[in-house]
Image 1 (spheres, rainbow, N blue to C red):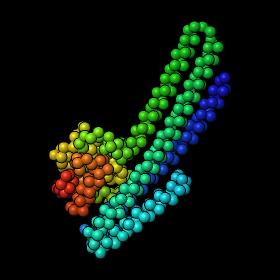
Image 2 (cartoon, one colour):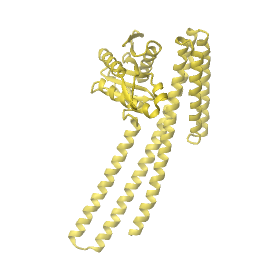
Image 3 (cartoon, rainbow, N blue to C red):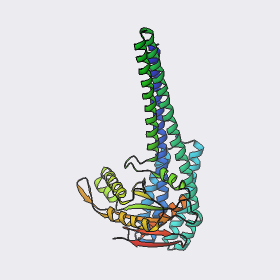
Image 4 (tube, one colour):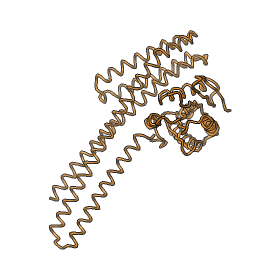
Length: 377
């Protein structure tokens, strides 16, 4: 019986390791899809630099080239992780979206801004919306598959531990007939069973936390932001999108490790700038979001002012003083808008700041549908 327990534990341990490996593969797939979604979103925003930057054709071409090179790498990395038909459709959708962006860039390049805006509203935004929905769906599938694999692995290990403890308890009962030793064996068995259940519960809690939080800063991630916006229950909310200014030179000059340290420092300052009921989220890269509970416009503006001020203070990174800024877009819920529309409005406000002086904030306010820009220097 003891030998059987050892064999069982060995087999389950091997299966546990294999299943956790599969879970890591699914998580890598989710990460690739999330990064691809972010790069496709950035492609659209890069185009509008053509309006404010005289050197934009060269700069835009370079940035688009870098983005699309990375997108090709991500699509190639998904080979084998996604069904062949799904990956083929995804490549086709990405190619169609790029074609519309190239047309829009051509219009901007010759100064046809109104035509470019009309094209963006008519084709670019709907195509990206469909792509975004598709990528989020694939991300969720990968996350669910990873969670399922981890849960099965942990459950199998817990069951095997329980069976092994039961077998050991039976051996002790057979060898020791005395009532005291029998009771002790039962107590030990129950204790081990509880440990196994506690371990399983801890693993499940860790998996849930990892699925909804950024591994670098520990902040909630885009997935949790979506849940917050969709689960507001009709209550008013305000959403702040925060994009760092001059972050790329830190990475280029001091390295990615220094860039990561800077992002951690920024997340700490954002947490200090908001109220206890507000939620700070890292969307990815150098972009963050803040959900303001209650949706009060005056509170949202004060929080935006504090964020711009505190992020604008110097940071000590890798023994070097660096300065970055924050461009903040603010959107206030109301008028029956859902979370996707609120995120879109905040994004439009943020890019209004990015196209202007940076280092400030803009408020997109319904129902007037007008952009109020207020820079903080």
